[in-house]
Length: 132
Image 1 (cartoon, rainbow, N blue to C red):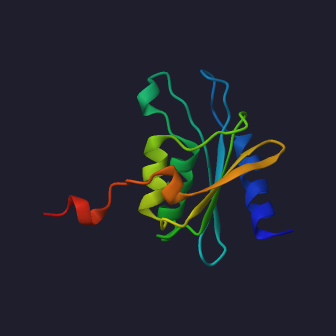
Image 2: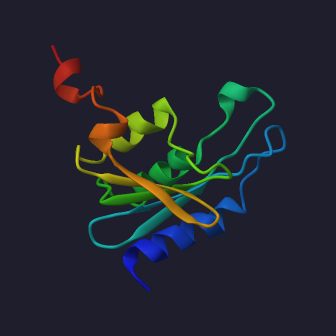
Image 3: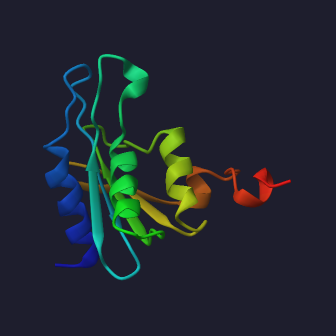
């Protein structure tokens, strides 16, 4: 099994753990660090919608908790054919990836499209822009 296939399968498996009683839209994410370690997350909804957590946010939190700071590749899987990360998650991914970071977007049947981070978020907030 290739690294990408394993990343897809990890995202697909964790998607089943999503807590989405309000939208019934399950999302899973898997991030691979440069050393091959994989971190996963799923969406967790809340009756107070802004308190919800996206799958990518959960995976990034797991990565940071484990002491990692770099994403080499990502897969996001949802029920729709083109479930791209939301704006907040694009910024989260960009924080720990380069402009060339590849984010693969998938549905249950497989990867549908791959984007670079620069394609998803061409004018991201960056530390150099926030410092005075």
